[in-house]
Amino acid sequence: MRKYFLIISCLVLITSVKGQDVWTLEKCVEYALSNNIQIKQQMLQVKSGQATVLQDQLTLLPSLNGFAMHGYNWGKTVDRYTNQFATQRVQTDNFYLSSSLTLFDGFQKINQIKQSKMDLEAANYDNDKFMDDITLGIATGYLQILFYKELLKTAENQLQATDLQVARLQKMVTAGALAVGDLYNIQAQRATENVQVVDSRNNLDLAYLTLAQMLDLPSTDNFEIETPELELGAQPSLTAMPEQVYGFALENQPMIKSAEYRLKSSEYMLNQSKGSLLPSLSLQGSLGTGYSGAASQVIDSYIPAGTQVIGFVDLPGGSQDVYALKYDPVWKDNTFSNQVSDNVNKSLSFNLSIPIFNGWSSRTAISKAKLNVENAKYNLDLKKLELRKTIQQAYADAKAALNKYYSSITGVEAAKESFRYAEEKFTVGTLNSVDYNNAKINFEKAESSLLQAKFEFIFKTTVLDFYMGKPITLNRK
Image (cartoon, rainbow, N blue to C red; front, side, top):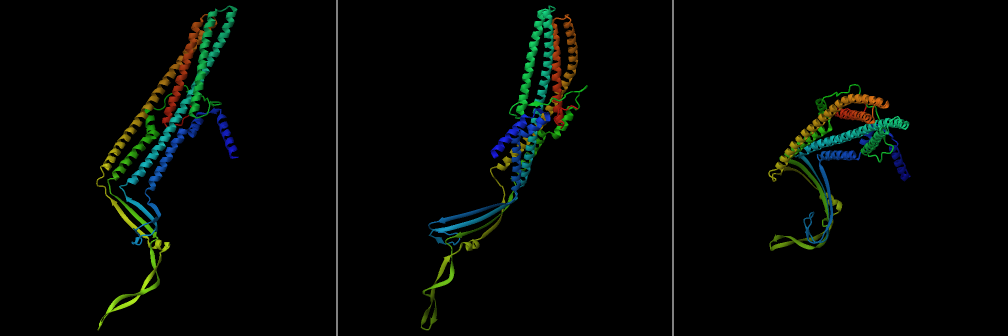
């Protein structure tokens, strides 16, 4: 059943992906952010940072370690629990607990925790920056498809108009009202426009493939994006100046936030290195006990073993020895439980470590930490400069595209009227096919230039809006 369930789940997933015929830009972005493998890998880095923070915080707690040993000894040795020489095989057991707590270490652990927290925040912003890059990449690919769609539509319309002219001239040539050379010229123009249609369709297919690969889709089958109305209005303009965009982005862009937290992390690392110059104080305690097979104890029963002299008395005839019965004590092995209870030992100590000379390693670590701080400052300045350049370039490109758009509108109107006039003259036979084709080519170029300026302006303004904290969307309302 589990096998069939997995198969059905895979089929449902594939069907759901392939069945999504129309994809909006927002849907593409959401899908990419949810399924991109590199983003998932980046999230693992964030989780690793979280584990590091937790581990650094736990270092403030006391340590506790246990030790147990069971062994045998042969030959002459001093038993640690009886202080007697033992020559037979002796079984020993040792049990030990130790604990230590750092009371003061120059705030090294505190600064380590703060540093790991800054590194975690930087990793979070690095992940946001990575997601932003993917979002802009998806928007670029999406707009590229829309551009080639419009270009293909324009090329097909031009080819359709030329087909009508070819059919009309074919009839005129057949009727003897037009020279066959004019027909050949129009047919040559038709062949050129047909190549343009093929090229536009190929470019559109490649744009779809590029976007599908960004989304990690298995193929472009049944993959179709939504075509929104991208009208710029009567008077499109740039609403924000570069300094306004930069001022907002400076406070909110993940790449800047990440660099700022990296700088804070390096500063805490410097504080941590300085702490190694200070004395450290720790508290240690231990609890231990053990068992020895050589340990024994005297029982209350004694066995008489003759007499022995225990002293003497002075008598008139001389001294007289005093005798007493001699008894040998009866020994028995001390039990395991008794020894574990009797051999308990405890210790408690305060340990103070004062660094005096350690090969200048602490001073070297401090010097390196200072260099890391300086490098982090330079990196932050570099990110700010990079952000400023990106915004200035996007603004300049948007402004240039807007100027080109306005001039292209005029050019399209002029080329359109010129082509209309040439078409009328060609229809009545007062204009040759070469001049007609030139007028048509100029009109096509003007339309293509207008289309490029339009999409360039849309994309660059989308980038500027993105740096202003606005969501990526093609809704121009």
